[in-house]
Image (tube, rainbow, N blue to C red):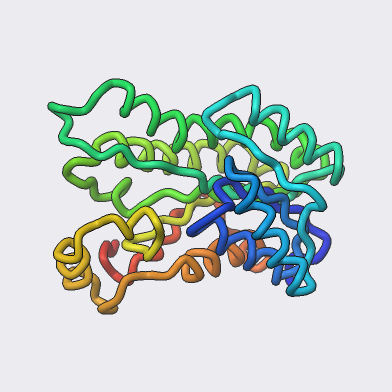
Length: 249
């Protein structure tokens, strides 16, 4: 129970990687404030956490991370309930794939706002609490495609690359206050976001992965728990690759 006494806020916690992160953090002893747009799925997550004997917020935090007013309201509510937020996991993300010559401006803006701007908004709302207590963990979920690019995903790749830059800049800003900021870069992970891809695409993707399999949300969650713990107290500004060897170096 390495995170006993800590409060963790996870965005996009209703499904996929965010759901796995919330469960894993709770198993390590953290009180989890789960945030997402879907109230029903959040309540199901909280029920799972409490059934396992771990701690979750008595009520969920319904918010669209692309809406600044909702972010401010939800995090203010969480801070009011718990008095602090020790760990922030910026996980919420979307895709709107298209070749750049056909991509609509609205699809560019939606992905950048949800995937990148939301991380800035959430950090801005929790950083005061972390600075006050001189301890904090900020973990941004980026992507291997933010490191190597992907055709048809200029908006997604740009947003995830931006998260890496944000991670490093924040790490420098707050290091003197014992706050770390790191990123986790998943590769091909079996989630609802990848489930819609063709079987041919998936098979070709696996051929490029040295470990010979797609990753699971739990693989990413384990990395998040490590970075959130005191075991990672001397790691900041780092991008931890969880990609089965798809990208090395």
